Image (cartoon, rainbow, N blue to C red; front, side, top):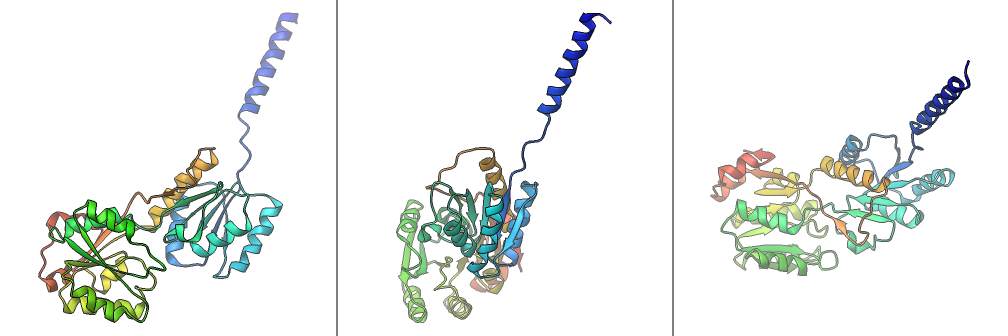
Length: 306
């Protein structure tokens, strides 16, 4: 065999060898999902996440107790995760306090700015619908609503920015402060201020099982439409709700996680908004209140109760 043929064979061998090396898979990335407890909305979000991020993940359930974060920390000490995805306030507080050097992506936390959940390794995605979206959809449902009432606990909710957004849409926001004991008084006060509808926001002082029944009953008595943040409240009698879809939240987190793991940059001072929302309408309530909802809005609704 000639030297030229030998060199050609050797060259082909090395070319083939380096092609094989080039096709070697990248090292697996370790991703943890940590949820505060096992509830349906968290499960839906995780299913949505898995629809987008299809590689292997390690799941942890804290079962409602932050002390169970120790199991996550112990596993992380053996092999540091490349990303932690936390679902809910309990899980997010736990991982941000115990795993300060690991990139964290979190959601399903109402008003995360209240909890100092920020840092150079933390990416936040909103859980609630932006006020501008809710108010815009409320205007579509109730075109003549110019005075919108809101009950809020100032220790849990700030309405200053919401008032600015409302003004930009030509709406006057009538905000009344409450505590758990003053909701009946606040409802009487707000109904006397000639509001066109009541907007229930996710304030845990305002929306409790006993207070919700009282608010809806009082609103019915005053022929006052209620715009809510949950489909369950529409089932109970609110006129409409603009609310998040938990699977959509998970899918958006899946896209963000993929970006982070590929080395993409995120703004750690920003809470990334939820890009989708759902609409439900209770036509029985509309009939009771003597309201005619535009057929185009009804057809666009994700859920209708009639």
